Image 1: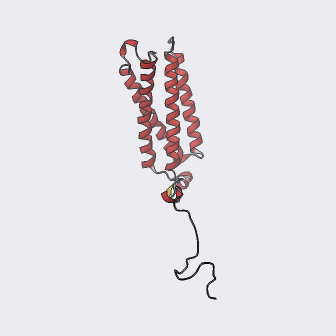
Image 2: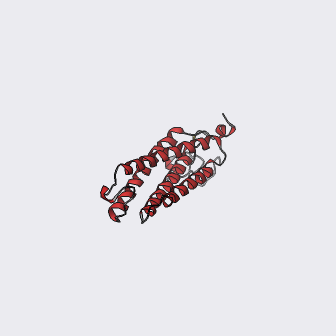
Image 3: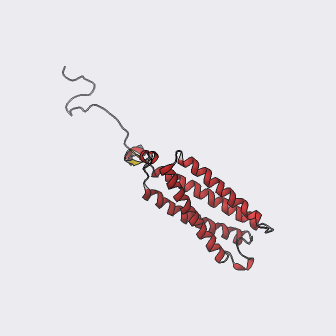
Amino acid sequence: MSEFAAERPVNAVRLWSGGLATAVVAALVVLVGTLFFRGALGIPVLAPEEAGYLGDAGTAAYAFMAGVAALAATALMHLLLVAAPRARAFFVWIIGLITAIAVVTPFTQGVEGASPTATAVINLITGVAIAVLVNSVARTAVVRGGRPAREKPVLHQEGILPEVREPRREPTEPRGEPRGL
């Protein structure tokens, strides 16, 4: 085990369950984006205009690949948390640059019209969602001192039971008077 892993154990169940939820969100972002651009704005994204509001099999493959990208981002975060200093900072930079590539790529395909712009917007929103959600899950998946980071007892966190340290008094003892007089 590396010296970083010894200092920063990771709650893998929390990280990967959050990564799976992020994969579902990423796939849904693609579907909603496609529905919005094709259905509401009439822009043929990822399929010919005749394919309908949700496109064709290409849309399903695109949504599936967004989910796979979220799982790959989770794997990257897990690797960085175990082996790299400032793991979350590196993660944000890596995912940010990959998202930039995904945003620019539609414009390099030689397609005219609004379709490349719509695809770039969908790619941008999907990349930002993946970066934000996996980064947020990772913050809570790092275990410090036997409990995940930033986790407090629920009642104290909500301010219901403040920590008050008063000396314990006997029920018959009046307040304000010193003991033993």
